[in-house]
Image (cartoon, rainbow, N blue to C red; front, side, top):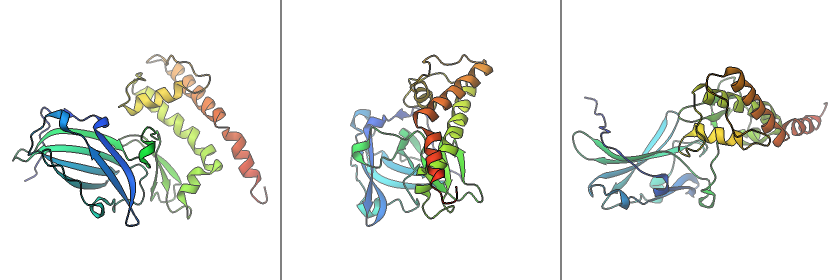
Length: 254
């Protein structure tokens, strides 16, 4: 028999109630967590879980109950299933222990911050090392955009992602794909901080020279022009062509 969670009447836990940070635990990737759930008036015996996930990789950590929160010991907070913290997201679930497995409250898509002091910074496009066969990179939209990069292409995939050659060739194409996807979804809201599509549109409108007004829905030509303007503004701001040329000319034989 497959047990399913009953989501009826679920309370939304605000991200401000959950703080997560990367830490080194016994030489391995781990995390610290602080949960402030008092304001939600949940049942004291309700069980609390923190889940880490990326793609199909998933780990669950038991944090006791609402009435007696218990942060796992450091060695039990190691993210042993993940080869890096890039692209790892978290969920917090509060469930009532009954035969119906009722989900009382939840927060989802919480990013893992590299440093507690950087908690106000969030990457729009996390870079995640993956086995991509003969591909060097790929965009993935589940559940939010991330840049998958071949972890076997070089000895240091992170250095590859920082290379001006890679960035000049990949990032404009990635931006074009994401913005085109958002506009094709008829999304026009730039104020919803909980929606990745709003964040990307706001990022584009803040690029130098970009208009605040978004293209109208069903105006395909206007959408295409707006996206191309955003890609040009992005490339100009980061001097992608110049940095690419400088890096290329430094290669012996070029």
